[in-house]
Length: 346
Image 1 (cartoon, rainbow, N blue to C red):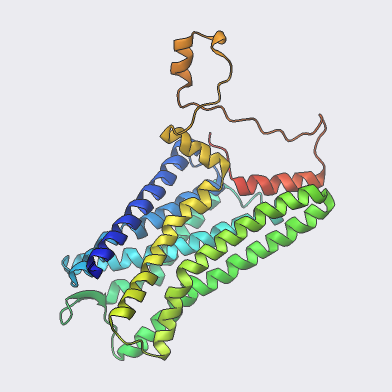
Image 2: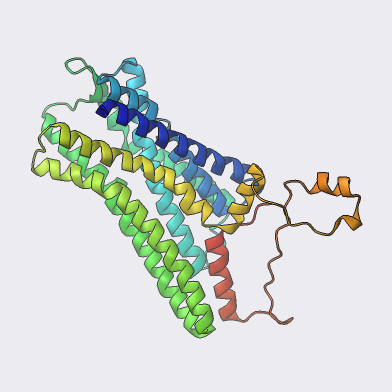
């Protein structure tokens, strides 16, 4: 099968999965939470950034299949700017969410005044402003190169210096710097939960450690696996020029598509791992049988069936044990559980 056909098929699959996944996330957050919670506002912003990144696939795919840019100079600038902005915005969203998780779990009381929807909206706006400022050089210097008929960046003289500086500072700001912050946040979360779990008992310790460790491993590993090869290759290419041939072209295509896979994976990481979001998705798609409140004896059979269709009743959360208020240590565990499972849909 020709490489161009394989490229087109892969791009189509990733585009459909990423577009549907992130669109469903956006709909669920808006439909069921009314954008009232801090966590859901960050999730919404992340989904918007990932969706914008995914929307660039048709342009990239067309250019790859045709081997030239058919959309003109203006759309070249728009595509390059939106693509770069969404990359940084997505990474910054992950970073802000990690900081928010750290504050919620490690400093739940002191951070209460900062963890408000109004503040989250401001940070979400800052993410996009900072992303745009970082990629301003892309907007200025990107255009359709006549000699190659390709949409790319042409740096001013000396060309090599501009390319080196851009790759280094985008790699640091767009990957390595945020990765350090993300890892540090979750490391501190694990330390806090481990300490609280020791006081709360071995059973609670195992449960909370399992939840937090699984979340940390998935978030960090997927983020690193999808982006590290791409940024590493760009940096290596500065030191040793990678020759252009069919094999290297295929490898580079794989590295690029991996970054889009990360945007497809984010709905899974931040939504499907939450039972509450699973139930919201199931309500939207009517994929599961509802838990009926009572038998049909409480209302007419046909009336009960019509009212209960696609309306599952969520089980109540009970924060007391044997009629007693939870201890301080138990409260810490509940805070961890609530933060990891996010908010229930309203």
